[in-house]
Image (tube, rainbow, N blue to C red; front, side, top):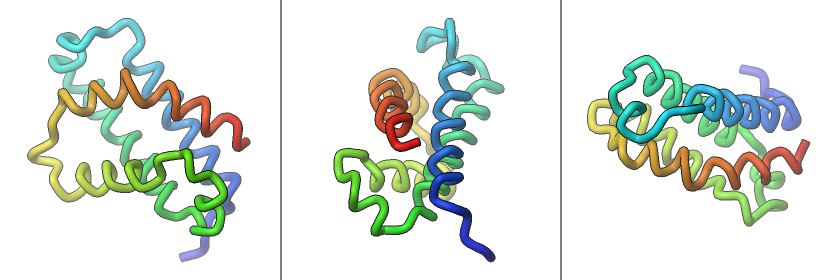
Length: 110
């Protein structure tokens, strides 16, 4: 498998973050937790964020130690390997608390 260019991977991360923002726009926690399609879309984009992050060269991620690269990969791993036990409250908390800052950090890289 050929390696995707670092700039494209960063763009993939930002695009996935922006999609999550659009998907949850206007939703509160309860509406999110009861919206199966939105949950699936948000979780899928967290997978993309984690997978794109996993493919970034280590030398690149070391240049930006303030970005939670390991957490992004860790969430992807939990989603992929423990999909049946996802804590949707935790997903919602990440969306509301962590994603805005991540969006700013990733946007600065482009």
